[in-house]
Image 1 (cartoon, rainbow, N blue to C red):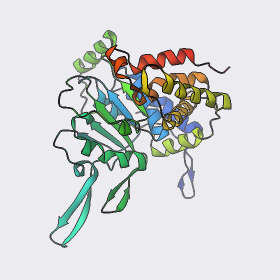
Image 2: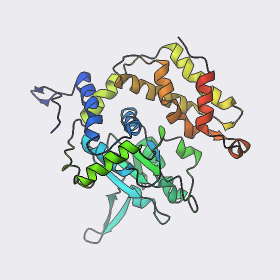
Image 3: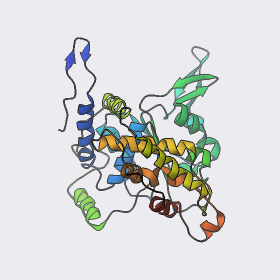
Image 4: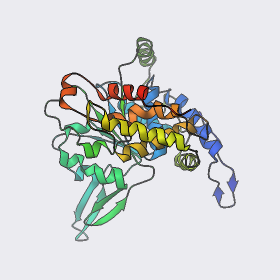
Length: 334
């Protein structure tokens, strides 16, 4: 069993974990998740960054590349509650947020929590449900609450939506509108594994690995909500030089004037890029942000915030290609 002693007991109970203890816990996280998930290191990094930044993640990949297993493993390793909703064309908003239920014994309506009341919500194939149900997540993602009959109901903290999209079989789907895409901190592509990783997956299954029983795989909590809170406090102290802030601004402004782009990244995109770079710097053991931190997370933060011109899409140009060019052309501070 992997565990970390993170705090000292005080008169009123255990003390909050220190920043060093939180850093040690998150350093052990990748190894722990690796007991269940082979590869996908980038996806793990972005999910952790989202937790630290109070953001949400859009995962895109074909079926069968362990997207659900990845979320379950992360929730187990961080001792967080998680739930999964399969988005379908007949799913209603109340199926996600919860609804009022009439109690014949008391002759009153009581609110029954929906699956959104959790720490990690896996919104599976979110583009297969109509926009009315998709929009039910907007308030939850942005305000971290659900309003029913005019009464706000706060969601747990931490709260992260991990939504998935299948890039194939697009007939009959409902593409996410720009307003909802902008609510996601990252968009991450989940690719099919390399040959060696795929061999390791099969070897594990041949040795009896059951993805439905993570405890049998030896996966145990190495951190918890208190470590996330301690990490967030430490990240708030990470310095961002004015030169690096100017680089983030210039990069986002360049997306708005790129020839292939109709609408570039918003100011929310710029603040998201700064927050993600700050969290990455802390994970890498630094108290300051470098331009390389910004470059590392720029594509995942900005790719889904760019709306390309129709002629660019016809020519096969992608947001990733546009951003790759801008990362080469925008001057980097020294």
